[in-house]
Length: 272
Image (tube, rainbow, N blue to C red):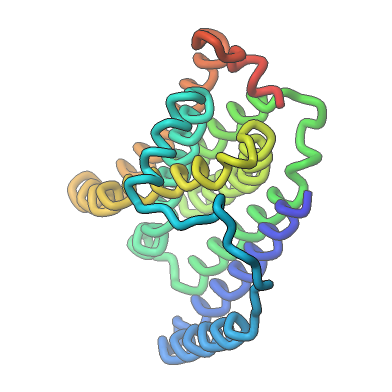
């Protein structure tokens, strides 16, 4: 769909910028900083030129306090436990993939890979992520969402675990495969949320996904650094990848065993 193509385009631009910056950093960090600052200023200039259409503020658009918003979130989650479970899975899935990506430069450079080569690996990972996002709507056509979610989640986890290999070629390939699986899953997951969350609650509930990711990253990022420093990079990548695999197993068990009262069983709910 259009979301997958937009995500794909953004990942392609990010991948190209990352590889160029990493390649330039092998000789000097001056140019990467100059290009980053220039790109940021250009983005701000473009954003300033955007104009939002004027709209009136009706009774239903009054501003609410933070506590009021939290109350709405809690009520919506209690009413839709399946959605709450999927939001929790999504937030933890992205956390388990973000930490290995943030530490990849340190992990691979410690094994002797240059900045330019690391940038190439990261750039390729974003290219395959873009490809996955662009073709996701044609992935396993006609299959229930649960049978897309589970194998992609497990594959994304196994790929991160494979990045623990000492052989850099195998580690880099495994990481790229993990990013391909994540790229395929991202638009499928968003599409599932759009189909199953009423439009009136969509913004409220999707904010929980970002909140879960942000809160878990606060503790998980420094914990990941401590784990790598104490037990080595392999331990970090095995743990993060294993966590994603565990999420896939939990989704599989939920699809067969969870039957919340008054709600369509997940095996059929995850179909749409």
